[in-house]
Amino acid sequence: MNVWNIITVVSAIIMSILILVQVRGAGLGAGLGGSGSSEMNTVRRGSDRTIFQLTIIAAITFALSILLAIILA
Image (cartoon, rainbow, N blue to C red):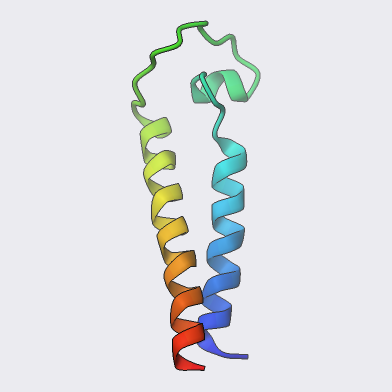
């Protein structure tokens, strides 16, 4: 198994977990059973922002690992 394949699989798993943790339109507390507000415009703060940024990094890593596997194969 190629190192790019391992990076692709690991980044896909991490990205899937991070996407499932996020809750659209609510804070992290609402996704875990707390009461969320019904505001439409929300600002990501604290752990929500960190999870969002980590999801973007995982998606970029996933896409780049696929491209590099195709180019170098």
